[in-house]
Length: 392
Image 1 (cartoon, rainbow, N blue to C red):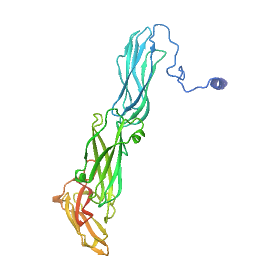
Image 2 (image 1 turned 45 degrees about the vertical axis):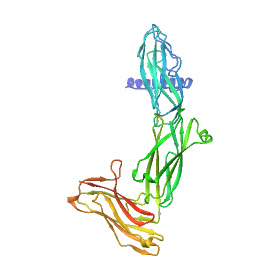
Image 3 (image 1 turned 180 degrees about the horizontal axis):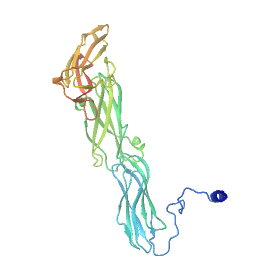
Image 4 (image 1 turned 180 degrees about the vertical axis):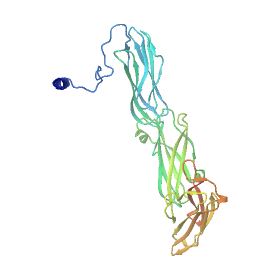
C-alpha cells in the first residue's frame, strides 16, 4: 500500500516539474506559430546537412504584368538554377485563386543547369488589381519551397458605362433616349460596325446611333485608348407592360467582336390590368403554378382603361400559345372616363387535349402568351404572359 502511494506522489511531482520547465521555456522563448525546426519565413536559409546537396538560386520571384485585359491570359517564365553539387528535384506546389503553375520544363535539374517555371494568370470575370502566388517544391534542404508572385491590373478590352440600361415610366406615345459610354483599352483603333437586337419582334422600336467620344470624357477613364458614345433611342409603339431587349454591338476587334447592352423597362399608359395572387403587374404575367393532367384552373382579372378613350375602347383576343389556354372577355362597364373589362383565363379539364408541358418561363422554357388587340390609340396590342406546367 505504501509503495502505491509513493508511486502516485512521484508521478504527480514529475508532471508538475515538467509543466514548470515547459512554462519557463515558453516565457523565455514564446512560440510564434512556426512549425518546429522552421523560422518565421518558409524560405529562410537552414543549416544544410553534410555531403553533396542541390542549391536553389532564383534570379527573381516576382513579375508585374502591368495593365492587361481579361480576354487574354498572362504568362511569365521564371528561372530556377541549381548551383549545388547534387540533382535538384522540382514539383508543383500550391497556388492561390486564379493563378496556375502552367508548366515545369523539367523536374530534375543537374548541377549548373536551369529549369523554366511558367506561371499563368487567368483574368476572366475579374477586373482590378491583383496579386497571386504559385509555389514550387524542391529537395534543397535549405529551401524546400519557392513562391513566385505575379501582380498587375486587369481591365476589360471594352468597358460599357452603364453596363445595363433601365428605363421606367415609358408611355406608349413617347420615346426615351439613353447614352452608353464605351471605353476601349487596346491601342488599335476601335469602331462599332453594326448592331442587332435579341428580340426581333420589337427591334423596330430601338434605334442606335454612335458618335466619337470627346477627348476630355475619354481622359476620365484610366487606361482607355479610345471610345465612343452609343445613343439608344426607344421609340413609341412598344406594347404596354415590361420589356427586355439586348442590343448586341458589333466591333472591329478580334479579341472582343461583340459588346452586349441589356435594355429593360416598363411601358405605362391609360390601360392597366389588375388580378389576384399570381398576377405580376410589373411584367404583365400570370403564374398558374403546376397542374396535374386531370386538374383545371381559372383566374379572373380586370382590365382598367382611364381617360377620354375609355368609353369607346374594345378588346379582342388576337392569339394565344398554347391553344390550351382559354380566354374570355366580359362586357365593358363604363362610368365616366373609367372602363372595367372582366378577363378570364382558364386551363380546362379536357384530358384528350392535354399532355405534360412546360410553360414555366424558366431558362429552358418559354411562358405561354396571350395577346389582346384593342382600338385604343396607345395600345394596339396588349401581351400577357402565362406561366404554368402540366405534370403527369
